[in-house]
Length: 180
Ligand SMILES: [Fe+2]
Image 1 (cartoon, rainbow, N blue to C red):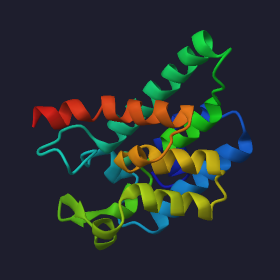
Image 2: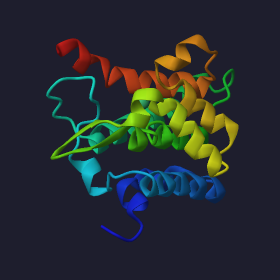
Image 3: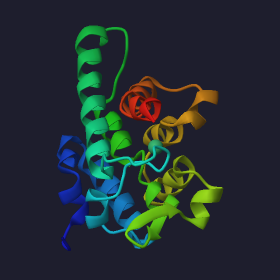
């Protein structure tokens, strides 16, 4: 996997209708790879989190599951609650694809495994994810989702799209955490 690794990783990019936004999301992932010692191939093998011991779920399986859950939830909310709530599906998908891009800086290889990098011990991926996205001119509505998808967002007012992303992430994380 050399050419266009981001598109191969994320077929869900096609769900973003705005080509401009799609390109910025792709650019952000490319920038993250350029600063990380993790490769696209690694993401099919490494665990999705270091906070669950012996986690067997891979990074890509978890991240793509969250994108699918967020997208389907957003569409249902639009269908039933759309008269009262504005929901931007492009923002939801872009935010879901980008929310953990900072993990490419948070983790580094440790033999066959991964560990927290020096950067990751100081800056969680929500912060570095926003930094990467801003360098690629990703709009604030999407950067907001990266910033509030995780526990850091608990002290901030989330947008509707922010709630969707946060819950999609935690409903597919917390059960693993509780099992441990
Ligand atoms: Fe995260």
